[in-house]
Image (cartoon, rainbow, N blue to C red; front, side, top):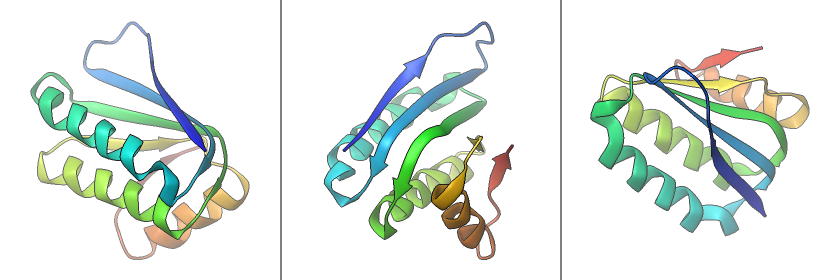
Length: 106
């Protein structure tokens, strides 16, 4: 099961959300809630940084949910950045980046 939480920081134009654990189909409700919050708050954000450095694994459903977040951000002219992916998560995001323009920061 994946946990996500907003991280406090000093830049009001950026929101940072940390993901931990494993992101799978079982997390679809949590991701849907996250997307709902993003939709409501989009005018106040310029960038969203998804901190995935503590995300250990992502399955196809989890990746699809992140792509949905990416598509929403793109539609709203918002920069969505996947920060510090590693291992299997990095491989999945890099594979998805072959077909979508993703922002991935090391």
